Length: 114
Length: 112
Image (cartoon, rainbow over all chains, first blue to last red):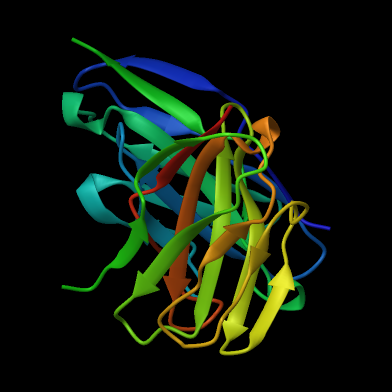
C-alpha cells in the first residue's frame, strides 16, 4: 500500500529566504505526485503535479518540485518566499493500481516571519 | 466559471439527526470524491466515484453513504451522525482519475 510522509509539521522561514518542504512516499508501482496548497479558511488548490517526463516540475506562484525515484521523494522548493505564501501544503500520491485514489501526507504549515 | 460547489458551508447539528451535504460540479468530470480533514491527519478519503452509478469505499467509509445518480452530483449522507464525525469535509472532482482534482470550499460539520 502507498503512504506519504511529510517530515515537518511546521516550517518557519524569514520572508525572501528560500524554503524546502519535504515529502517522501512509499510505493512499489509507478506513481503520480501532487502538491496542493490550502490558504487559511479555503479549499485546496493544485500547486504542481508530476505524471511523467521531466523530473523537475514547475508550478504556480514560483514553486517547483523534483521527483527523485531512487529516494522516493518529491520535495517542494521556492527560492524566495513572500508573506502571501503562508499556508498549509499537502503532498499526495496516486497510482493506477489503486484506482487513482489520492493518498495524502499530514501537511506542512509554512510560517513566514517578517 | 468551473467550480465544485458544496452546501452547506457550515452546519451544527445533534447526534442521530440525518443530514446530507450536497456536492455539484459543472466541469463534466467523471471522477468525484469526498474527503474529511482533521488536524494532524491530512485528508482521508471517505468515498469516491469513477462514474455515474459507480461508487467505492475510501479509507474511512464507516458511518457515511454516497450516491452518484447523475454525473454532476455526488451527495454525502450521514444517516445517524455521531460526534466523531465532526470534521471539515471536502468534495473534489477530476476529468479522469489520474488528473488533478478540483476542490470545493469545504463544509464544516459539528455534531453535538
